[in-house]
Length: 248
Length: 276
Image (cartoon, rainbow over all chains, first blue to last red; front, side, top):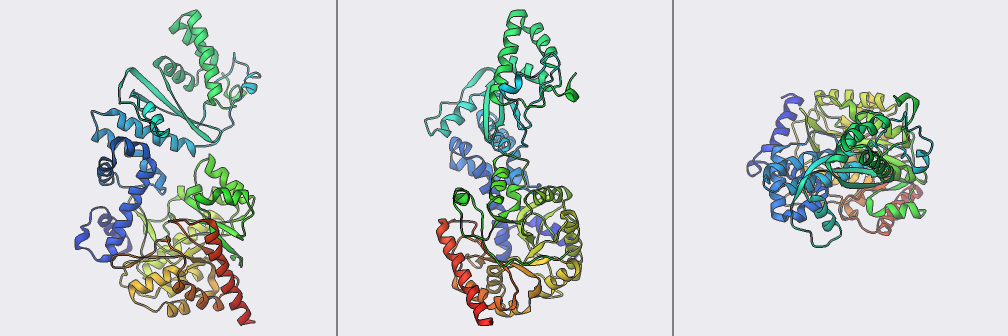
C-alpha cells in the first residue's frame, strides 16, 4: 500500500472507525483525535456550555465532530463552524448560536491583525471633507435577534443570566479589539446601515449626506457626529483615515 | 548551512508561567514555545512572544508541519511560520517525524509513519522544502507511536538517512523512546545506541502515564527515573546539546520545573566530569 493510501485509510478510520474492533494503539489515536477536538470546543465556548448545560453541550460536540472534520493546520480554526451546528440543533433557541458566535468572535478579535488606532488627538488633524473612514481589521459583526449579549455578560460576571428574549427588532453585534482587549457592542439598524456605508469606502462627507438624506437635516447631522465620536472612542477606526492614497 | 550547537537548559513557555517569566529573571537558558500558538496575525499572544524574546532565547516547536504527508506541505503554513521565524530569530525550529494531514483533513494528532524507502523519500522532500521556505535547517523529533507498520529500516536508520539527505538535525525526545520501547517491546538503551548522535541538537525530557493497555505520552507528570536513566545513558555520546523539560498538562508551579531542570543540569555536569 502506498503512503498516500495508508494515510487516507488511517484518516477515514480516525473519523469513522469502530474502536471496539481495533487494536489498542488505534484506539489511542482515535481517542486523542476526539479528545483534542472536544477540549478545543470546551475551551472556546465556556459560556455556551454553561448556558445549555453539560449534557447538551457534550451532545453538541459529538454532533459537530461528526458533521465537521477539522481541516485547518491550526486548531484555533476548528470552533468557527460550531455556531452553525448549534443553529441546526437549536432552531427554536437562537440565543444559543448567537451566544456561541459572540464567544468565537471575541476570541478571533483577540488575535486579529494589529492596526494603529485613530485617537481623538489624531482626529483633530483629519481633513473630514476628504476623509474615508478605515475600520479596524479586527472588526466582525452579526445580525442578532436575541439578548445573547446580556446573557454573555451575566455569565462572565458570574451573575444570574436573564432569560433569553427576542429583541423588538433585529440588531447587530459588533466585535472588535481595542489595543489588546476584545470588545463588543449592540447597535441598532440605523447605525448598522451607516457603518455598512462607511465600510464600503464612502467618504465621510458623502456618508454624512446619506445619513442626512435618511434622517433629515438636524437629526442626520447629529447622528453622524454622534456615531463618529462613538467609533473613535471605541477604537473602531484606524489611523489610515485621511491618507491621500485612500482619499476620494 | 549547519545547525549550531547550544548546550543550555530550557523550559516550555506555558500560560500559567507567563507572568513569572516576564516579571523575573528565571534561570532558564531558553524557552520553547509551541509555534502554532503564536502563528496568529496579532494581538496579545504575538506581543507576549516579542516581550519574552526580549528577555530569553526562544525555540519554536511545531506540531502541524506534517513532514510525513504524502500530499506534500501546506505552503500557507510555511509562509506563516517563516513570518514568525523572521520576527523571533529562534534558537531552533523543530517539528515531529509524523503526519497530521491528508485530503483536506487535519487530525491535529501526531500520526505514525512506516519506516520505508517511499516514506523516507517523501519526508526528505518535505523537510528540504520546509528548510528552503524557512531559510534555515530544522530539527525533527522522534515521535511516540502506538502502532507500528511493516518497516524496511529501523527508526534510527530512517532518522540518520533523513539528516544526511536534508541537513536537518534531531530533537531527541527521551520520554518518547521510553514509551515506544514499553509499547512496542524493544530495548530503549539499544535504540539510543543506534541513533546518529552527531545530529542531535536538542533533547526533550518529559513524563508519561499508564493508559488502559499502553503507556501514553501525556507530558502531565514529572520526568520519571526511567527517563532520567536514559538521559544519562545518551549524554556521553552527544556534543553540546540543549536540554528541555517538556510539560504540557497538569502544569505545576514553576519552581517544580526549575527543580527538574536543576536535576538535568546535575546529570549533565556529572557526565561531563566523568568524561574529563
